[in-house]
Image (cartoon, rainbow, N blue to C red; front, side, top):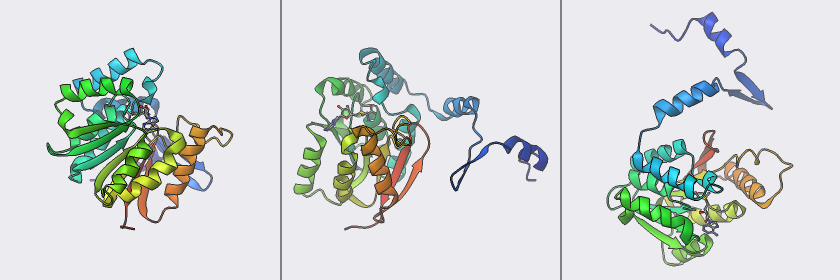
Length: 247
Ligand SMILES: C[S@@+](CC[C@H](N)C(=O)[O-])C[C@H]1O[C@@H](n2cnc3c(N)ncnc32)[C@H](O)[C@@H]1O
């Protein structure tokens, strides 16, 4: 028997939870308590992930906010594993949390090209990748990511990547996307972090380079017929983008 509360009780509980934003009906019934509950039951315990994030907070307290959200990290392991991804690329490594999550979804012979410019941040990454026993899956490249992507394209890697995670400097987001897409195989997936960019993307009065960069890419993806896409409202917002065809 269908028993999702009685009709009257259901409608009284949901009253006020369906909010309208312009012409978009947004059904959100989640209270803060429920969000915390979902995080509690939904995130799998992993000591190395927790240790990496707490060392990041201790050593880089002012930058620790850059780590990918804990639930997003666990989320990304799932498409990586279910699509049998083997060849991945990440732009923006920081202390290595998102690369660790991607690597945990890969088979033993999978590979991530992990791109960053900071030896200092990524020294923590290397320590935890080794502790997790996944360091052999990650090739760290310390150089401006646009240069590394251009080199990969020249060296014949176009149409070969299964999965990409875009989380680098936001001013360059649109350039990263346009240069990453040719590297992806048909059906390959790009996850783009920070769709909301700390609530600045939705505020058109915020015109610094990073907010503008994120906004430009969000609008580009939404109109791009080379891909399927959906933006998911958790963490700082994440765009899931799948390449439709070769071009
Ligand atoms: C938001 S953090 C990445 C967070 C990471 N995904 C994680 O889960 O911890 C952005 C990173 O981009 C790097 N970055 C900034 N400019 C870059 C560039 N031109 N090329 C490559 N990486 C860059 C920074 O050093 C920083 O580590």
